[in-house]
Image 1 (tube, rainbow, N blue to C red):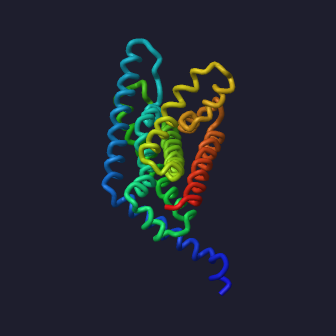
Image 2 (cartoon, rainbow, N blue to C red):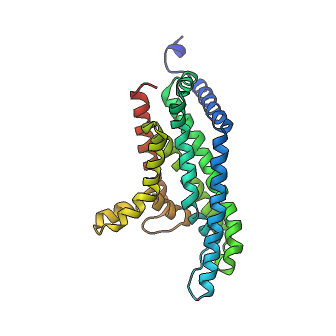
Image 3 (cartoon, rainbow, N blue to C red):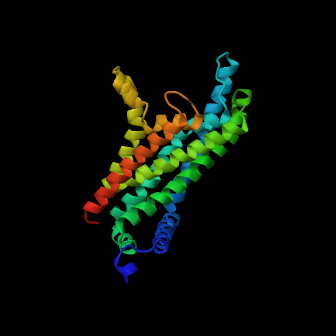
Length: 263
């Protein structure tokens, strides 16, 4: 009786978490838009990786030092494909509000922390696998396009793939929180543009040292450190902490909005 009236045993909680995650994974996989967005991310990655690789070779042959390991070229190419992963994650929440299916989802998973947590976990896993895969296939395209200017080691490939997976996994979780907070597909997509493209372009224009320092802690800049194992302006461990902090803030705000408002 105490187990029913009080906190459920750990085994029961794990079972509920697995069912909630399976519910979210089924919804995500059954939507055609999911596969369209992932396909666009792949096409964008392949196209930009080839373009950057070919540009590196052309510039190198003209006397410029454009040597960069092909996996790092593929990581840079995530500047485009990251947007598709961010949109996919945000839409996983906002589309439910737009279609009214959020009511059904909350009836199936009534504990709102479990609902948001399972959605974040599933999208985080999708983001991690997507990031690693996109850098992997991007390397296959960038390496021949860059020729001798894109030579790389297995360690560099592993670093880029792991960094990309970690970044896109956490980015997807951020966008789940953002979508829950805004509840608007247009608003979430706009916010993703601002976070991923707007702020990284605008903040460096300010001469104030404090603003420059703040810009280095934006998600995209932390990702660059993580994916290339750079030591400046901080190391990969700090980069993970920065991305985790962003994720915590977005998910916390999303949960507060989900808990404080009716579906």
